[in-house]
Length: 253
Image (cartoon, helix red, strand yellow):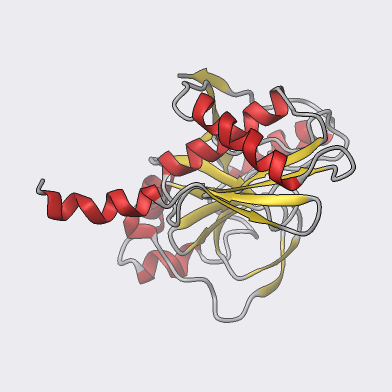
């Protein structure tokens, strides 16, 4: 590649990180202006480091696609000091390796939650079975948790399945619904309104306030979907209702 083609990207990266105060007890740190795995991984590394080795006055770190929200106690530490501490932490951990979890999530591609399976398959000029094979054949990355408690935003959706959100959101989508919105996939955590397109559901609960760890997935996790029949999904759902653990992650480098 020539210097002319690499210079704009170099200049873009040189602008980051950018620190911005957010009120008197928080700041945001932006690491980029696009959604990509490398930037998101940097955000997660810094968040993990702050949680594992907090500075005096640290309260919380909330990772997003390409930025990190840091909440602190202004009676203990100033915003300027937080910025200096975080800048040093970025230099320390930015390129450190981090173990990740990979989840295999059972999905019933059908039933009441599959509101858009047939219409989306027709829109993409494929059969529902072909859509299911394409969707379940990909590996996804959890970019962030948000919108609702435990709602899981996933990158890695095959390009052929990219689909715009509905012009008018539906008022009630069940917990566990598996969605597609734009270039992203999702696991719905609690029942509520949504304009995403839905193709199935999982009996696994992405959010359970009675669980020791209420959020099942975390930013940086990997997710694969495993198709199951309605009978197996019902059996798994009954086990989940009893408090059984039906899936466990594997650790990957």
